[in-house]
Image 1: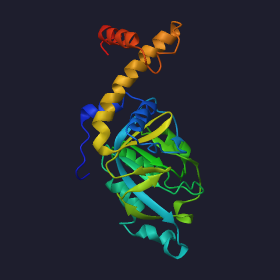
Image 2: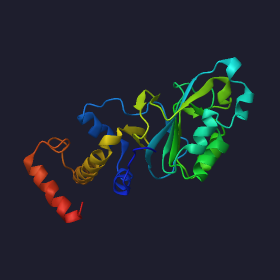
Image 3: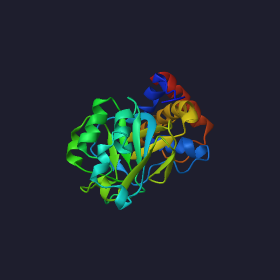
Image 4: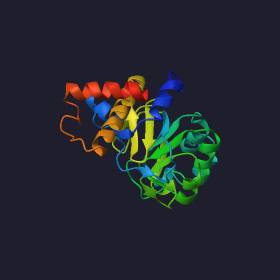
Length: 241
């Protein structure tokens, strides 16, 4: 997408860190609302979802403008989003946290997967959830929902700033999903957040080793001891972390 750059190195680092670490790193920068509230994986994939956001915005449907005939239009925003979301990106749908109707179904999500899209996130429902869960591509939703999007949602905008699960999402922001949920990293912070989180994850692995060995968390987590920092530095050199 225009102006977006997500290097392979940054993508690789983000694939190795947790949404919890990202949330802490963003909180240190004063960003408190970057977690997409109320969404869960449709099915576990055993790997992260990472990619720049490509957005689709729904508004409450106005019935006289949103009957089944709207799909005759090849430029219908929902269909157009599915066909234009770039490979490697994440389709993020703003459904106003309304899961009483679906925002997409398994055929559209399969099309995204076939086109090489990195994932899909909606704060609404998805229909045919069982089929979506069988796809290799990660998908996040509020819950299964059988009614078509047309009953409640009217697709109006593509690739504009949206709110998804109370998180602000701008086109090109970096979406990172794991088993806990989805974080939104402002695009300009992606590289430094990825680098910082790699260090954070290394320290947490060190902490886990110490706690498993019987160490108290006082002074260890969070680290408030120079002696522990020295032990951590030695551990990193020894482990290559």
